[in-house]
Length: 225
Image 1 (cartoon, helix red, strand yellow):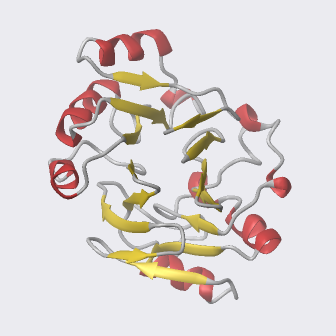
Image 2 (cartoon, rainbow, N blue to C red):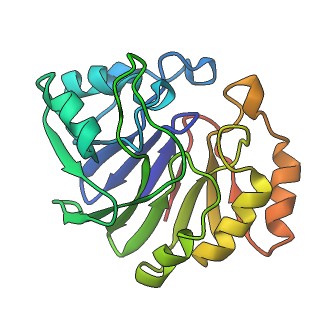
């Protein structure tokens, strides 16, 4: 499984010959200006919630690739009404796709589209594919529900927001890693705006103090698990 960081909370995942894009907010992100949205490949687009900094490039990518949009029922319905292919889900539910299994899990946040349309309840995703389990938290506060994820899905990687203000901060993310029983965390949702800038070295050291690794990828770089 290859995971590429496209800045903010945007990810690319390649697994079993399938390309997945998560929460694409790329074209308006100054830190991701070297990423060409129109060149991205996608068979599926996963959306954790409806805020503009997570859905900005959904329609462009979906039009370019004919990707299936996977999200909660309200977000899927919003894009289905626009003529896009969708797969609706809801909290606690899972589905087997051609590349592996996805489960939609709880997140504590808010969710509405930039036009004011209700975006349902926010969530995260657990992806089981190619003998790896990856948790993508989406925008969330620290929540005790995270303990339930590791009970069902022993994780190889957790992808957690660490920027504070809109989500949990680094300190809460270290606790989340303990709840999730994971030793490796990919941080995201940081540095994009003034509210969420972090000190990278301090953040990494806080994880190291808990005997865990925080990975902060440069925008456009990848990691494999």
